[in-house]
Amino acid sequence: MAGLLTLLLSSVMLSQQAAAPAVSGVEGARLADVHVLEGTLYHVQGIALDKDYVWVTSVDAANKRGYVHQFVRATYRFERRVNVSDGALFHPGGISVTGNSIWVPVAEYRPNSSAVLLELDKQTLEVKRRILVKDHLGCVAVMPDGGLIAGNWGSRRFYVFDRKGKQTRVIDNPSPNQYQDIKFVDGMLVASGNLTKTTGAIDWYAWPSMKLIRSVQAGVTDKGRLYTAEAMALEGNDLYLLPEDGPSRLFHFVLEEGTR
Image (cartoon, rainbow, N blue to C red; front, side, top):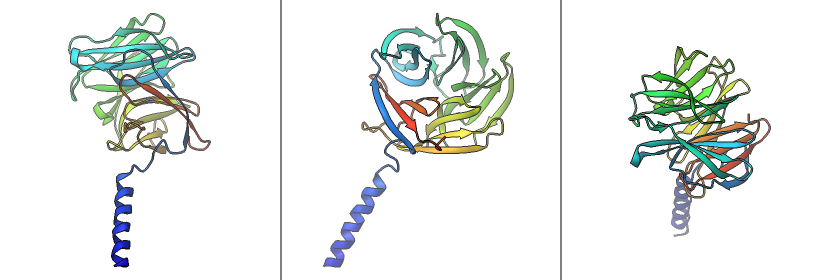
């Protein structure tokens, strides 16, 4: 009888372990702080920061509208937003900031469709340039030479553009990770995405070889939302994740030395 009870208890423990996510936060990182972004956000897609502001993209699918929202970084208070949708193109994705520009992909809300890469002026949020692409684009990063790399639906392919907007290369994603937001940091491509509904990862790739240098796993928030489900930004060892739709919480992690 004692042996049967032990066996039953062991089975319950194993079942509980299997049901729990492998990582409760972000591997090799500590949660430094959490901030609520004040203002209306819809389905969050991407995030970018500079010393003064936080920019977030979100899509209002019900009304077929896509927005870039601007928040004051010191207070996380909403300041303004701009509608970046154009007809069937209303799904903004992961974004990147460089100099006085914000790069935003805006696509049809379906795979294998079409998109436009918008260059917005940081001060006015007006469009400075458009690059049309014959595929859905869900994220974009600015390369060290000023060119662009953009991932399609689930980032199964990456499209590379030179500074003039000419497509120069197409790269198949070597990972099953479905990247949602990408950035260039210290000359490497950093990509954040999901593997399952409860497991994700942030990956560092050498450029231009696309050799995987490092990968850290991510779990879910206290509300069950995968940390790497949507928006990601990285400043040195400071990792910012915005996984939840409005009202949205910005999670600030600090990566341990050696994690990057």
